[in-house]
Image 1 (tube, rainbow, N blue to C red):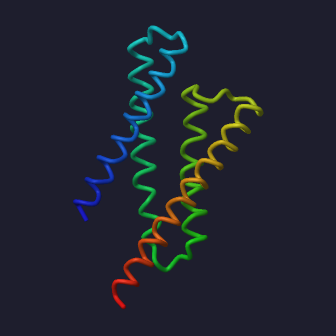
Image 2 (image 1 turned 90 degrees about the vertical axis):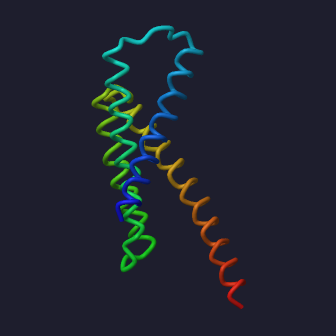
Length: 134
């Protein structure tokens, strides 16, 4: 169990740093040449906290007594319920209806694309294992 928790921590922090660097690069390419140290640290810490929460939320899919629909909906609610308020608070998403609506829509589309791809991946993996057992 400790190994899995350490893996979740490493994965969450790693993904947060990759996304942080990606968005910093996008900002730089679009003319943002400097960032205040305090702002940068705040954004990086926030991104890492979100990365950890997102990573630990995957434990939801280990609740075998729950249906895949229930797991997916709870996971989605936890992620969006964590990301959206944090993104508004930190200033990544303006606290207005339009940007919030776009954020929720984008988050939902991206979430379900990833969910669909992962579902196909695991379905194929299970089929392959079942085929090997025959």
